[in-house]
Length: 329
Length: 145
Ligand code: B12
Ligand SMILES: Nc1nc2c(ncn2[C@@H]2O[C@H](COP(=O)(O)OP(=O)(O)O)[C@@H](O)[C@H]2O)c(=O)[nH]1
Ligand SMILES: [Mg+2]
Image (cartoon, rainbow over all chains, first blue to last red; front, side, top):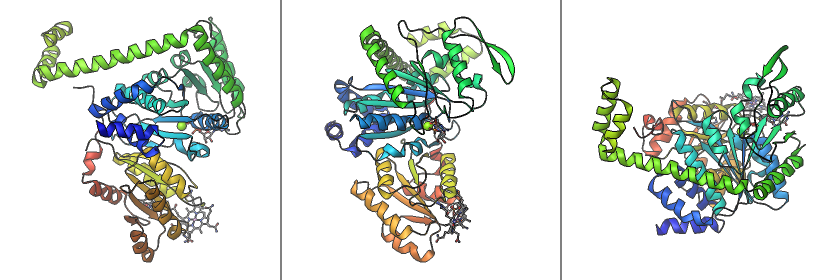
């Protein structure tokens, strides 16, 4: 415990090696992570957390690099978490987001950490949130989280952010497949990146149709007319703006920053920010409690008995609800 | 060993020979490592800073330009400046046999030339950490069962 206290204090004083070690401990999970998490919790709640999600190759890392440069020009410090998938077969991962963040990688006001999704999905969302909190606790003013917008985990991680940016780009294959309705629903700001590329206007048009219409829209898709369903925005008083950027040149980045600030102001003025923070921490509490309770049940009941119940379920000798009753007896 | 082994693959120098670095990065990923690849044109400072932020266990340097005698010792120096003394530093690329002893004296643990099998590289790293290649392929715990 005193070691962890010293580690945290040294990280707070700006020692980057201590911060890096601390993040590894949090990522590892277990008892040490829980102790660290408790130590740093009182210092959290100050950073503005921005999530960036979208398909591979849409320009998330490049845009993060451009945004970070702009925040640095204004004197703000930036922590970045870049998440990439682990192979489900080997557990290995190739984390290449730093390649596009070279402009800011050596800046003492910036800290970049790459994270692999590792085995369990719930575990990743938890570790990512712990790492966001750690960067917050040591004083980073903006924290940006990059995830591949592919599934539930990404949505979970994105929801740890105050402001969620969903990014799309032309030329990534089937435009409609790439733009998933579920991911649009979590967007506070939509960005069509690679606005310098052919097809950007079409991508913009599809997004506009999906977002603004409660009726289905008809668009051209591979030369054929096709109907797409509209997505209802779930947020009162905030219509996600759709912006165009060229992350490579920085075009549109100042407009994006303005939109982020507008959203941040909206969160505070409307009370939505407070409501989100409340929902988020309540969900995290429930998830952690579920996990701990389950671990306790497994420990008390024992593996053999658990396997026995599963066998009985398979043979249809008992039903799921009865099995749960027996576990909790 | 519960912690995943994290490896930084970096390419110091100004040349564009990145094929070897990419081959090694992919091979190590397939072996079960978490590999951070930083791309071309890295200065020793940039490499050491990335190693620090990513808290890696291994730094792998790929160099084919001929500048290894100046660049590789400088990477080690920058790592030490940041108190990253326990990081395993290895190198590969076009490095003449006669330069290897001096590089090892400077803190490069091993040098792997053209045609090295990726198995040999994986085995070297595993031996260093006292684990077997099969230990790498631990896919995280599946939901508590
Ligand atoms: C392909 C190649 C190129 C390609 C590079 C494409 C790319 N994106 O990588 C191109 C055509 C662009 C190129 C250009 C040049 N090249 Co060239 N190129 C080669 C060549 C023929 C093969 C390199 C290669 O890709 N091998 C395949 C990979 C997989 O092998 P590898 O990198 O050796 O990696 C293996 C091991 O070394 C090891 N390894 C490598 N890295 C690492 C890292 C770690 C951590 C570990 C553990 C192991 C490891 O494991 C790998 C698998 O076994 C070599 C000659 C040769 N036979 O090596 C010359 C060579 C490297 N090039 C050379 C030169 C001079 C040039 C140019 C300057 C030529 C010119 N005058 O314009 C330009 C430079 C341009 C620039 N901006 O950089 C010289 C370098 C001379 C020197 N060192 O003193 C070489 C040696 C040719 C020669 N004999 O003269 N080149
Ligand atoms: N033409 C163009 N290319 C871009 C733009 N933004 C990023 N790219 C390129 O798109 C590729 C993928 O970018 P990256 O940031 O790695 O995407 P990510 O996978 O979403 O993080 C890289 O080659 C970038 O250089 C842009 O605005 N215009
Ligand atoms: Mg990326």
